[in-house]
Amino acid sequence: MAERGFDAFEGIELGLMPSARPGALLRQAREAIGASLIDVSRHTRITVSHLESIERGDYDGFHARVYAVGFARSYARFVGIAEQTIATAVSAEYVQARPGQPVHHWA
Image 1 (spheres, rainbow, N blue to C red):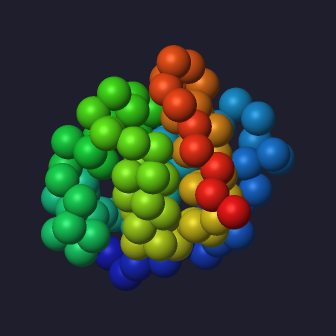
Image 2: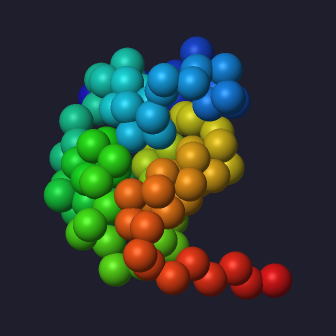
């Protein structure tokens, strides 16, 4: 595996890339640093199947939005992408993908 942290992805703003989905950005960053899903899984302790789901934007395997967002945040940290940007995008994508799910906003 190559050195972690790919500067070209640091602080990426999804608004500048309207067609880029958060999972695709994570996958591109992972591939750019030469990491496999197994590498990410070992470092983050997130299962490969959950990482694959995040990359696909498929959130059916997550019991709640907080898990998808938290796992994506850890994944972003590992590959060197701005965590909050990815977390916000995954949260929005999760809500769109699961329209019948209740959404709780905690103050």
